[in-house]
Length: 163
Ligand SMILES: [Zn+2]
Image (cartoon, rainbow, N blue to C red):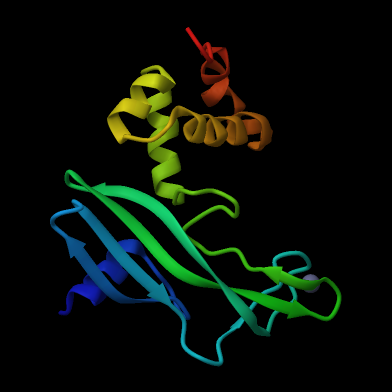
């Protein structure tokens, strides 16, 4: 099995998404996984859900993923914008990240889990990200998560921004 197939399985990617390449840079201590879709693929409109929309153009997205041991890992992809008859041209949702976030869903889950046990500043030090970026994730899930999940994140809200 090729390394790209292995990463595809590990990431749980489903068609049309597939892993094109994995590049490990020893000097930068960084793993870059390139995800793509075949020409002619169709997607659902992110607004109304209409199926069968073809790609109008694409935008390059890079999302930080869980570390690969001590190395930072990134998922890179050209993300299509689709042309929907009702909604116009919209960027689709990818299955591995929330739109507008610089992180993958798994990385966000890690941040949320760590936030139950430590300060955001400590998390920022551990994952080597600016705490402003982490606060953006926490605020999203605290303020916009479905009601049922609020109890899990309540104490995150109680954390002091600048203790
Ligand atoms: Zn639409």
